[in-house]
Image 1 (cartoon, rainbow, N blue to C red):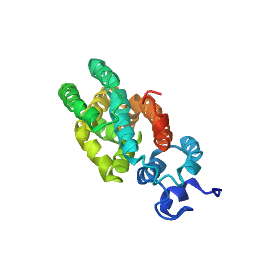
Image 2 (image 1 turned 90 degrees about the horizontal axis):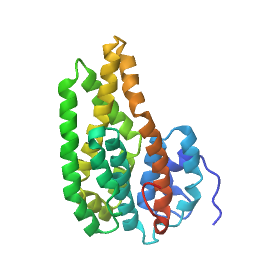
Image 3 (image 1 turned 180 degrees about the vertical axis):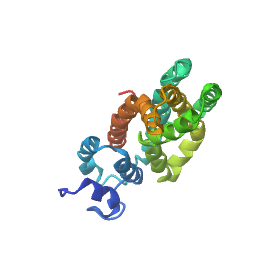
Image 4 (image 1 turned 60 degrees about the vertical axis):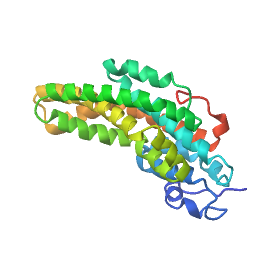
Length: 246
């Protein structure tokens, strides 16, 4: 079908009103697209815009469950991995995630439960250690910055997309979403706290401390935002999926 030119933001707000009528767009993709519209910088929104015409008419293609597994797999083996890798003592745990078989079935996700729980406990221990050795408001600033920067990488976009489809949400629950999310947040906080503490030791303003914490996470944010767009494309055509590292 011919797809009219449309403003990207308008599309993300009114995705159900596109040609083909309500329900012509995959619930998972529609929700994910709207969330991406809230987090991506303008240059990356343009990359996502090129994918929009491919969304129309695939709501009934029978791939929603596959999209749910793709979202969970990306969050565990790419998103969580990248945050863990920032902390040297957690890199072995990060490697465990990428060594996992891509999750495409409920059995796959069940096998991940124990691993994710163990990794979350290790990340929590690192966070406790960082908090004990921090001074002043460095830890509190780091926690806030870490949460903000993680949100900018697609964390909430994936969560919302899984909520958009009941079966897929069951998939996310099976792999202990909270454990993976907390592990990633703890790792990001450890790194941000170290940067914040160094800035505070120089006697700079609180704004400068926040900027330092944010800068320490910037590379991962940029890479994960680009990866979130690749996930978007992979969910459009699940059969073409290979690895969250692609």
